[in-house]
Amino acid sequence: MATRVGAGQSAQHEYERRRRAWRTAARRRFLIGLPVVLALAGVLEWWIGWHGVGIPLFGHIAAVAVVVAWCGTFTTPQHVRAWRSGADGERRTARMLAPLARRGAVILHDRALGPVANLDHLAIGHWGIACINTKNWQARGARVAVSPDGRTLWYGAHAQNREVAKARGEARQAAAALRRPLDGLPVDVRPIIAVHGAPVGRRGIAVFDGVVVIEARRLRSYLRKQRRVLSPAEIAQVGQAADQALPPKQ
Picture 1 (cartoon, helix red, strand yellow):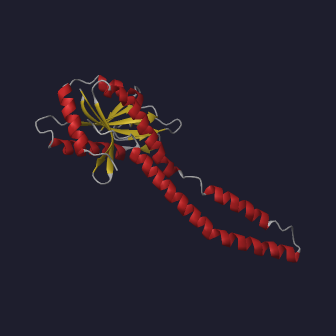
Picture 2 (picture 1 turned 30 degrees about the horizontal axis):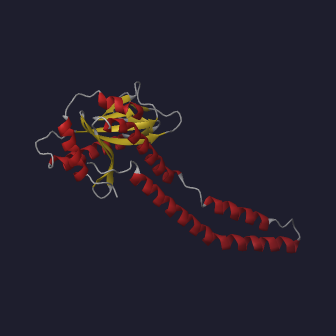
Picture 3 (picture 1 turned 120 degrees about the horizontal axis):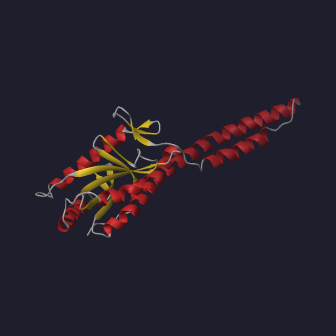
């Protein structure tokens, strides 16, 4: 039986780790700068009051600035929030894949590939083995499309060739990890990028450099329509081997 691991777990943990680190650093900067701001405000307040050249408001302004700066230590920058968005996207993909598991497929989430990398999802069914990388691309008005010359995959104004290469690399690593325990069975791992938010191509799907890029809402239907590669017994065998060869990401 496959080990149950929550989808997006490692991304959520990384988000929480980075958020804690950011807030700790922000509060440290705040505490370092606080005495300087208060001292400067006090000196200016005294100087204005002594010379009578204006209304001494620097103390009040400094107090407001301190409150605003302290509140700012609770905010999280976008590059940290992106990890939470990624975890949310992985959980949504997991929910979309769940009905396949009820029909005999083996669905694994958040599996380690070496000491650093991980697989978002591994879907094993009659279609074979699919290595699925979730992208939660929510920029307003942005689309996912292949350039007219076929050399670039675009998400809005951002080239995603590196993400495609990463998806291919993860599929190759997963295949290498499964080849030995599945000696005698075909080990062909298909790389797929499942996109939440941004529309993909003209019909919700595109193929770029050997990687299927598909709107996540179409993923389950896409897998169901693929030709049969594995029998039910082989699905269980591959699923067990994958569960052991690709442990949960810590």
